[in-house]
Amino acid sequence: MALNGAKRLADSLFGKAEMPDLGLGDTGTVLPLRPMMERLLSLDREAWGLYAWSREPLEGKFDREQKLQYQRKAEACGREEAALAAAEAVLEVPDSLAKSAAASMKLHVTAPDTPVGGGQVTFAQYVEPDEVTIFMDAVEKAEALAASEGLADLLGNVKIFDILLAHEIFHAVEFKKENTIYTKTERVELWRKPFSNKSRLVCLGEMAGMAFAEELLKLPFSPYVLDVLLMYGYHGAAATALFEEIMEIAGENGGKVEEETC
Image (cartoon, rainbow, N blue to C red; front, side, top):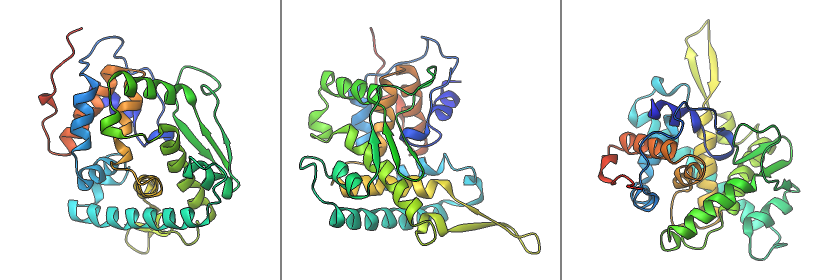
């Protein structure tokens, strides 16, 4: 039950995931955060690709090697676009390449506390054509956790705000280049002719967005690790369930992390 709830909570990365009532209440296993982050940081690129694929509606139509081929192309697209964005960015904000890139692209970036409406939690979002919102409640909770758990040695001094922003910037790039960019033009044929129907693979944009953020900010880790950190700030049991799911997808044993005793 917790596993299914965690999957619903993070059907796609960062801003596209909202927190419904998972039916977990205050129950469920809560593992300590730091050991989970250490395990997540040890996962390789292939594991994170399979995690991204687990959120793809058409996931069952592809074998492992096909998924990895798509992943490599999507990540190459993200890295290429990050290099272009970095080259074009005017350093209006000297300590933040992400903010400078957003300014150069004339994106309107806002940072309210929480979404209007309540009852759900959203981390960040992009709204076509040029609006990016980063919700600071999520950022502040994650930063407080990182400080209290002593995660600086694992995550470095990277700003969580900038990682979320960089990911959403890629979606703005996708919008501007929708007729040419790989993540928008790649299609899979669902049925053979004469009933041909080609569909876009949503996970390609998410994988490319992660690679974009990683390259733009020169991160020493995959931004995917923030899925668990951001969720932990709101629901430790749901974050633990997601961690265990990621370990299962990666072929790891999530049970090696001991449960919290308090």
